[in-house]
Structures are given as structure tokens and as C-alpha cells.
Image 1 (tube, one colour):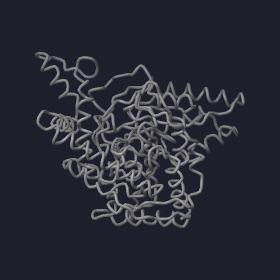
Image 2 (cartoon, helix red, strand yellow):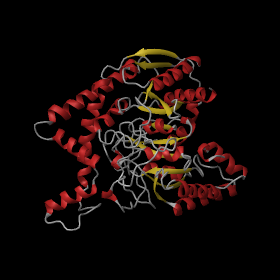
Image 3 (tube, rainbow, N blue to C red):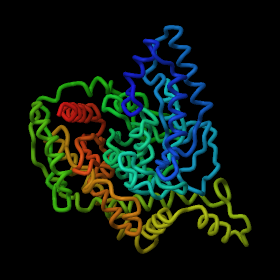
Image 4 (cartoon, rainbow, N blue to C red):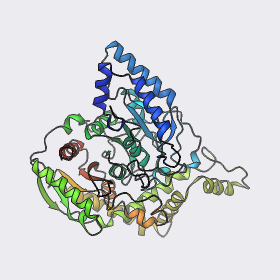
Length: 484
């Protein structure tokens, strides 16, 4: 098995046939990370910390199951990594920020605990944009992540490390989070599958919050089936998270394998306007034609409030960030300045030293929009527009089963290219933030490459808790691309 193509199915087959052991797989992957992730001058920098002791203990438990002939749980022996905004015993949780450097959580996030219970071998914590704020993974306090497909390019953000770790073969699957595109966009940039579940489908307990009404935990994997399998393990209600949903959890891997003949596919005109790279447009259109060849019908639709999605998102997300990050004050936990002159300077200097530039920018934006005299003009108005955007999708899903769009207007850009232009960086989210605001599910599926060999992904969107439909369409696109 090649590191870059190790799927859950191939790992289980190898374990059950005796060709390898979970301990051997874990040892190989840990060695690969140590050898290849930090090569001077070519470092990918996807991992921030390894949890070798925990990983090898879990691998040993899986090997015991195999020896006894016990049925293997869904993720038995599968090497995985966890984005560093999720808590996990045995490794620090920094959220990519200096303000949490050295923090070791005493508990697992619910999503992490479910992976562990399903036999996953959790190798460690993965780099990300600080507090998940960014579209390029250049905002981490611990250095940028490089795209394994082109080391001079960004891997996307904020879950760029999680996507890069899968693309580089360091893990077979990983967890990221998606607030405004942070799973789907890195999936596209790194050429892997990235799945954003419906809001409430996966518990957020143990997630270090950026924007609580938007944050979602989602998997990266080599295949749609693997992403579906990981989702099936994590999904479900959680008494520790009041926003988690009680809706029934389907057999997502089985749903993905169903045929798509007869499904109605929506193509929104607003996502194919000026500014879309020609090669991305061609790849997405080819994917749509592949769906037609498999029996889908294509319907041209409109999502008229799409143009307001980016400003709406950056008002609401920053407002929630301003509130959530106020807990990092230098008193209860996290970084504390060494010699504060008084209480006011303790707050100010601890946050000045601990937070990076992008996080400070978003806290300031959010605090401004929540301040007296501006709340109605910005925050309240943005909430009203969010409702209109959600209604656009509800109306669309009365006509179609799924929507297919580009994920990004351009291929991955060069590291450093947009760091001095935050507006340009924010506009890179133009095709992802609307679905985030609406709370629906979405997925990124590889569908081609540019003339320079850079990955291209296609986005599939489906309604609330319609992951089954989403995965059917995504699997059909994946199968057609593989056959091409």
C-alpha cells in the first residue's frame, strides 16, 4: 500500500489478511511524519505535536482484536490526525496560537472520543490558521503549512494542515473544522476529499470556538467512501452539546454507493460569473457533464443573495470571534504577560503578546460591529441577510436534490502572495461562505488539475441533514473522474 492511497478498506484488508499490523502501520506513519514533515527548506509543517504513546497503545488494542478474531470497528488501525482546535488527551491544544502554547487539555472532544472508540489510531495534532481564522494556513503562530502538491503554494485554510497531512500520506484521514470553507477549500487545494456536515450533525464539544453558530467538525480522506465512514462514526446527538441534532444517522458509506440516476442537479448562475478561473470552470463543467451521463438532470438555478455572503459572513463570524476570544485574558488559562503594571495592562499585554495579526484584526472588526451605535447597522442587518441567504437554499432544494459549484475562484496561490491584502484573502471564500451561513452540508471532491498540475476541486451542496444525497453525487463525480 502506498502511503498516499491507503484507504480504510485497504487497511482493514491488510490487517485481516495478516499482511501488516496496526502497530506496524502506526510506526511507519510516525516515522514518515518525523522524516518528511520537517525537511529543511521543504517542510510541509503539517503536524504540531505527535501523540506516539497514545497512538501505539490504540494500535496494540486493534492488534489484540485481530488476534482474537473479533469484528473490527469501522476505523480500526486507521492512522488519523486531529486539527489543533480540537481537544485530545495526550497532546497539546494550541489552536495554532501562542496564547495557548503549552496547554494540555484533560479531556477528548466528543468527535475525537468517537474516533478513538471506533479504533482509529490518533497520531497527533495538526497545524492550522490561528483559531481557525484564515484561508491559507499562513496565520499559525507555529509557521505556515506548505501544499504537498506544490511546496511554494498554500494548502488552503484554516484546516490546511489536515488536508496536507492526508495529501502527503502522513495519515489516511484527518479531522478539520469548517466555519466559512475551512474544510472544503483546503480539500480542493490539496486534491483530497473534504466534507462539511450539516450544522449540528457532529458535536462541537471540545472544539475551541471561533464562531459558534458556524463552526463544524468534518473529515478529510482520500475517497468519498472513507469520508462517509468517518462521518458515520462522529455523527449523532451529544448531551454535552445543546446544538447537536437528534436526527437519525444514516449508513453514509452505503448511501454514497447508491446510483445517481434521476437526481436533479442545480447549477447556480451566481457561482459561474466573472472572476472564475477558466480551467476551474472547465473542470467543474466536465464534472457536471459526467453526472448527466450517469442519468442526472441539470437545472440552472439562482441563489440571488450570494453577492452578500462574504460581507455578511465577515460581520457575523468576527462578532462571534470577539465574544468567544474574550475568555483569553491572561488570568484563567493561556498566556499571561510576565510583568503587568496593573489589571488593565495584564489584559492588554497578554492579548497583545498572545494573539497574531489576523486574530487581532477579526476581534477588532467584531467588537466594532457589536458596539453601541453600530449593532443595528451591521450585526442585526447581517443576521437578516443571513436569513435571506438560507431561504435561497431552501427554495433551491425544493427544485433540485443537490447543487454543484466551484469551490474557489482560483487555484492555490503562492505562499505570501496575499498576506498583505486581507480583502483579497477574504474574497477567496466567495463560493463557500453562503453554505456555511445557511447551515447546509457540503463536500469538496477532486475533479482535475490545472495545466501546471495544481489540484482542482468541485463543490457539492445538499440540504439540511441530506448527507446521503450529498455523498451519492460526490461519489458519482469521484468515480467518473477516476475513470477518465
